Amino acid sequence: MSRPLLITDCDEVLLHMVSHFGAWLGEAHEIDFTPDGADFSRAMRRRADGEYLSRTEMWPLLGGFFDTEMHRQTLVPHAREALAEISDYADIVVLTNLEDHRQPHRVAQLRGFGIDFRVVTNQGGKGTPVRALLDEYAPSAAAFVDDLAHHHQSVADEAPEVWRIHMIAEPSLAPAVPPAPAAHVRIDDWSDAKDWIAEKLAPAPLVR
Image 1 (cartoon, rainbow, N blue to C red):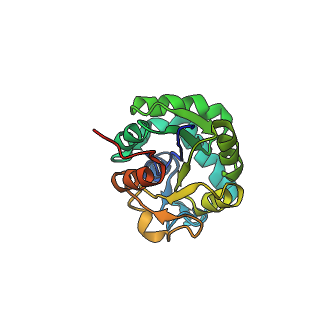
Image 2: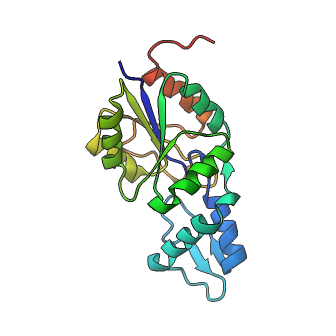
């Protein structure tokens, strides 16, 4: 029987991003960043005129952060230790929504934090790449961790057999975001999430 499979997002799940993105916007672009939940469409405001940035202005700034500022990102508490424990009994893939040319940078970034697993980049909904990973690995069971509700819906549509954990590890965001309707559970801390994942995926109780 194939090993179980954990598919996990990166930003706000393994690494903090929005807090560092906001600091960079203020320092480099004179933009105040005040996210209210997961929708950033009303989160960026120019200091010069108080106007909100449009979505067409927002996306290049996000890209610019990942081009030059990934070194700012910090590790989510307990993430590295939880993944190390899960890797004892399951394969792990990091599925991150970045443009493909940034994949090597994300690999190097995570390795710098002691997280050394396969990294798959994606654009758009995550249901299709999750389905492809299931076809490739043929796992005995699988779990998916992500901070965005629409990705949970996408996975529920394309791969309903996957256990889905909604996690927002950024304290400034989590209270304002309700649990994703398409997720099985909302858990914002890896100390608790690893136990839930083991209950669903581990082939037998772990002996240490």
